[in-house]
Each structure stands twice: as C-alpha cells, then as structure tokens.
Amino acid sequence: MDHLHLPAAPAAPILGRIPQVLSTDGETTPQSVLEAGDIRLLTSGRLGICHALQLLGVAAGNRVLLPAFHCASMRYPIIWREAEAVYYRLKDDTRIDLDDLRQHLAKGAKAVIATHFFGFAQPIDQVRALCDEYGATLIEDCAHAFFGSWKGSPLGSFGHYAIASPQKFFPIFDGGCLISREHPLGDVVLHEGNTSFQVKALIDPLERAVLYDRLKAVSWILKSLLGIKNIIWRSLKRSARSAQDNAATNIGPSSSGGAAELSIEWLNVRMSRTSRFTLRRCQRTATRIRSARRANYQFFAGAFADQPGCRPLLPSLPDDTVPYVFPLLIDVPEQVFPAIKRARVPVMRWEDLPATALESCPVASRYSNALLQLPCHQSLQPHELKWIVHELCSALNATRTNGATTA
Image (cartoon, rainbow, N blue to C red; front, side, top):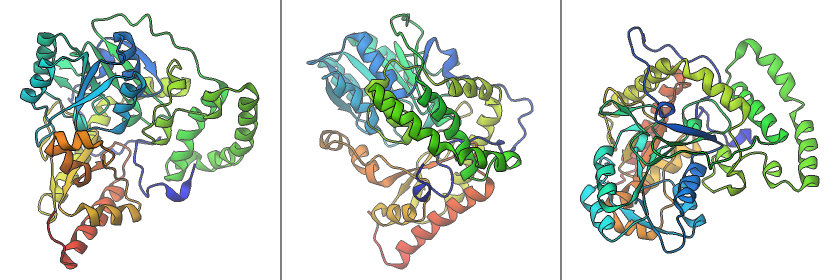
C-alpha cells in the first residue's frame, strides 16, 4: 500500500468504532439491497453488471442505455460484451430525464442501466414502467445506494437485475452484489478466491485502520504483524507466478485498489471470506451507519451553505436516504480541485467521460469537472470532517483572492 499518496483522511469506511454522533433510539433499521431478491456476492459491483449483461445475452449490435454522467467502471462491462453504449440525459439534480430516456427506448435497446446517484433514489418505478413498455431490461444500479427505499420497497427490487457495491459502505477489501427478485441466479456459479486473495482481504482493512490511527487498543500488535506482510506477499506472488494464476498474481480485483478498469478474470470469484464475515457483522450496525452518514452529510450541507464559490447539489436529505457521498458544485474547479488534491483531501470527480456522453448531456458536460464528491461515510471522525471543510474553504477563498471568475 502506497502510504505517501493516500488521502489524509479515509476516503472509504475503515475498521474501528463508528462515532456516536446522534442517538439512534427508536430508529428503524434501514432497508438494504440484501432484502431485494436473490443475491450473489461478487468481488465488485461492475462484475455484477457483467453478469447481468451476460445473462441477458447482450452482444455486438445491441444497444445499452446508461446515464451520460457516470463512473467509467460502468462502461467497461458494455465494452466487454461488444455492445453499443448509448447515453441518456439527466436533470440538474441527477434525476433521469424520462422524456429523453423514452426517445432512446423508442429506437430500441436491450437494457437500461439506471443509477441512484449518491444514494438518492430515482423515480425507479417510472423507469421500470418505461422499460416494460419498450421491452428493455432494467439493470438497477445501487452502487451508491446499498441502503434505501422507494415507496416502501428496498432499492434493488425494481430492476429485472440490480447491482450493488458494499465496498462503498463497509470496511472491506472487496465486494459486489448481483441481485434479482424476478430471475433465478442459479446460472451464476462462483468459486472461492485463492489463498493470496483471502490473505489480502484479511490484512488490507487492518492495515488501513492502523494507517488512519484506528483500533488503538491493539494497534501495536497489528503493526508487528503487518511488519512481516511483505515476506508473505513475496512468497504468495512467487507461488502465483509459478501457477500462472492471473487472479492470484493481481492479488485482488482492480476495484479494490480504486481503479475503474474491469478485471474480468474475477468474474466468477466469490466475495472473500473476510468481506462476507464483515458484511454480516456490519449489518447489525446498519442503524448507526445510517445515522452517522446522514449526520456527516448534513454537517457538510451546513458548512458549505453560505460559502462563496460552491453550492451543495442536494442540500436536503429525504428520510429514507442513506448517502454515499456529498456532491458539491464548484464554480472554479480548474483551480480548486488541484489545490485540494495536493492537500490530500479525499475527493473525486468523474472527469473521464467520452465525448459522446459530454455532447449528449449539458449536465454531464458541466459536472464532469465541477461536481466534487466528498466522503461522508461512518468512519470519519469530527476533526477529519472539519479539516476537509477547512481545506476546501481555503481553496475556494484563494480563488477569490486571486481574482478568479466563475466558470
């Protein structure tokens, strides 16, 4: 793990006590994709899209509709199936432009991928109705919405298939879900990953916890154990090379390292044992996870409400929303984004969009540079939240001092 290039605060959940920011007495456990239907636990969400497309028989000549504004990892499964990616428009709040979607469906489509951006539910029943009207299969993308519901039903239960990414919500090395309420998933046959993968899945979350000063009571023991990991890795990698095992040589899927690329050799590998165990354990704290994420989101909403140079995209949280990140629109992203990256603020944006997507949707064209995604996960400590706000406000104020104009 490259310690020098890690963000100064954790970008994703890590092991450790969830800060008790609010009382959860009387709160109901949030609904999750695990209640949405038959499920297969994979190593990444993008591989769930691969399985869904494969089960549908998507091939060259088929059109797959997806939002113009999207993470690059969504495109790779379509490329893998040699299908055509067609981009539909979004509204300013990232809700699907249903009129534009209808126009695309009228021209024919094998499947539609609909994303619940940042954890906020789409009018997914209306999207499903359109897909049914035109004979397209709906793949409900819950990568940002492990928890949440729409009109009383869990997200993930509206699509013919759905995918999710528990890595974004729990302190695990790997993890993805393929879900279907309507179609049996017996044809999705998975096998356990090899020893190097299982060991990596065990060690990586512990290492991240130590790096970010969590698990203090046992950190001295963990540091001693982690000190010998390089010896273990060298031995495992030598064994992997001798066996010519691509999955073993890579140790884990690209998604586990934060990359958008597709590691298709992991298609039929089951989520690691450690990640499955952690997922089961963390389900018991779902109410606290919900409370912490919502509180962190609302902290950012208040902190940036009156800050010149930016605007919270979605300042209000519906009651049944458990956010993935906090989306913040920046007036001068070409100055602010590099500054906060240099400060090692955990932030991302989807700037790697194809020209056809940018040309088809003004929202995608603007948001690819100007919409920053800040973490609001349950592992963030109060001082880390305040530091993120301080660094961002400093960068925003610097653009005003330098006389920058609004983009």
